[in-house]
Length: 251
Image 1: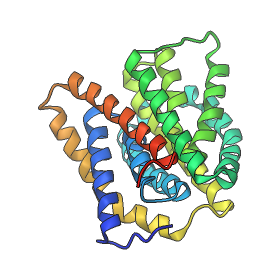
Image 2 (image 1 turned 180 degrees about the vertical axis):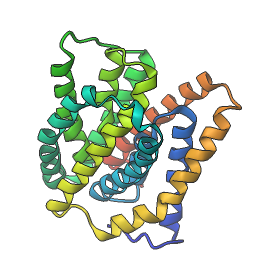
Image 3 (image 1 turned 135 degrees about the vertical axis):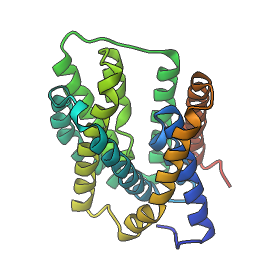
Image 4 (image 1 turned 45 degrees about the vertical axis):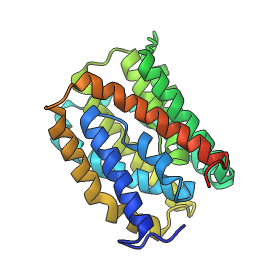
């Protein structure tokens, strides 16, 4: 992992990336990991990016769970949580054997596809929610431990099944808290969590909190619909950035 000493140029760049991604999340309600991952991939290896992203996302989800624990629909997230445990080991294997350049392209492609589906208003309703939740959770587990982006499958499922807005946010936070903890645990068992990445994540945590808070403040003063559309565009650009980086087109 590249040197990320506090106040070094690379660390400052990472801090700005976290601040920006957190600001967009506070403003639009999503996009933190989707924006942060491709930017960090320009300066760090995929394994370090996954660990840092998971740690920072874990912190933000803890805050949400504490404030909205009563609104988490545990019964509905249980199937995806249990099946994610089957996908996590596969994701750990992927990050262990797949080349960094391929992972960068894969991460970028996942981000772009998800953002395009969100922008198009894609919704798919399934008759058997438990089975579809299990399938979504399985793929979410794979993506979480291999890319730190376990959200797309379950987010698309929740919207497709018309979960109420009141329970989507807290339920996602509860699910991601479980998923992130298990992913980090599995990565640790296989030696993918390095001390440098953990220290870096801790040093970037204040930017996460500051950016999220600032975004929530600005949210009440701007056209929310416009900035949500802008956020989707930023996520797409970030995903393309990851693909370009993986192709080696960056100097």
